Image 1 (cartoon, helix red, strand yellow):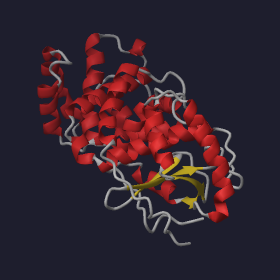
Image 2 (tube, one colour; image 1 turned 180 degrees about the vertical axis):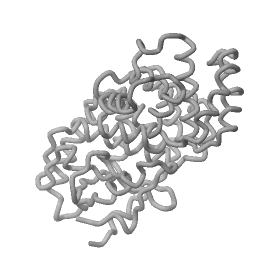
Image 3 (cartoon, helix red, strand yellow; image 1 turned 60 degrees about the horizontal axis):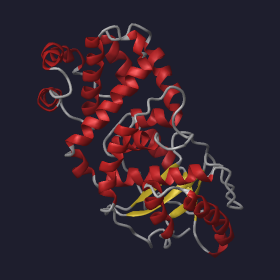
Length: 327
């Protein structure tokens, strides 16, 4: 096994409360190198992986994952201890090149001694998830400027919260709009680290075609109550302060956990490079994210995916750095 931590430092779009947890999990993953010693293991795994890939329709997953496969940048990773919040470790260089992806063999049910995998489909989508993360990290300044993307993402965040709260508990249009406004506010606060006043100006300027002007005029001053909140981990308290929910904060938290499962929960409360892949991967037949009642809107998801796909061709690769790792 080869230690990745000297060459590859875990990277995130911005700070979040769960970054240290995600970083710790990534640093626990070592890889089996693609060398003569492991050639039979990789021959078995690669054969099954390629066979599944060829059966997929000619969609974005097949195109981009096949590109990674052909570059021999998919590695089997072995975690020192059990982890449940990541399934793949992207290997990005300091000069923003993709050097590979290490799959967590334990969670993805890959036998590291034989290369036999009982969930090869999950491995394919895990590589796509990792590639989405790397693409977002390597194009962060352009993504930050993409207002259309932020509108779509904040809308999906709103859908997640409405589902978790329960439609039946939102007794008026105005209360539903308030959830939407809070979702937009916390999207910019948590994922993009914007300041209170600037977010209010964004809501007034960029969302007037989405939210009725009279609601914006009436409800925006109420956001002053939550100015001091900066993290998605406080979302239950925020909804209570805004008088949207009256339940214990734990009720909403448990609803989100059931909906998203452990890994999805970390994606929601983590950085943008986890949140965007979370949404995109929901349109595909995967089990590692998504539990009960998770909202699926293929039109919005596909629009988000198309935007990120635009950045895929800008990715650059380093095909030798992992090959030259020393034990």
